[in-house]
Image (tube, rainbow, N blue to C red):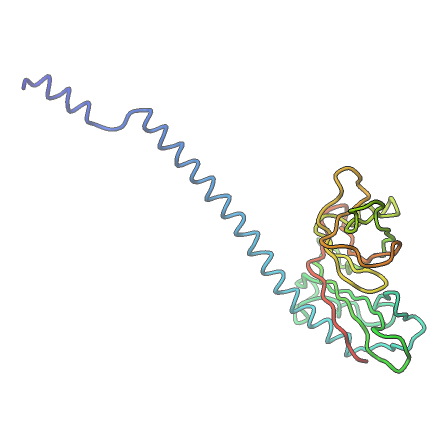
Length: 240
């Protein structure tokens, strides 16, 4: 074999063609995009899991503080068919609503707020249903995210058992997908799946509405039109 043929064979066997390089780069790019997407999902799920763990601990602390400061179930403020804000029944220092308790105010990133309702009628019964909302701190604002009362009614028509109409136009932005709401008369907790695609003042719940046709719900409204700061809602019956 002459030298020209040898050199030609060597040149043909060296390196990769431009097509092969482009295919390799494309495959790598696709793989990296999948890895990047999976990483972002993992970070989100990790954050959600961490916040839910914190919310459970903060709720336990909230229930303990409510028992510590106490309330009077025989008060004229209470009735079995309505919720009352805990702050309307007892005056406690604002810092007591922040979590963690052991840190300075600047380092406290979560707040709790509560609704109360006698679990049974009769002045002799001192069991109160307490609903606690755990929320994130809203920016640098030191205010406590508090539940707002929103009048609602069940959407008319067959098959709408899990749909509610928000009766006040200015409160439509108070309840969005993922919001957790507590019925005023019974305290039952529902989760909002989404808004109705055709009618923005109608919300779709995760289960059928079990309350009166016309009622109201309590919800932590979003701050500045954004996402609701509420992480979780817990409920417990406490004897006072």
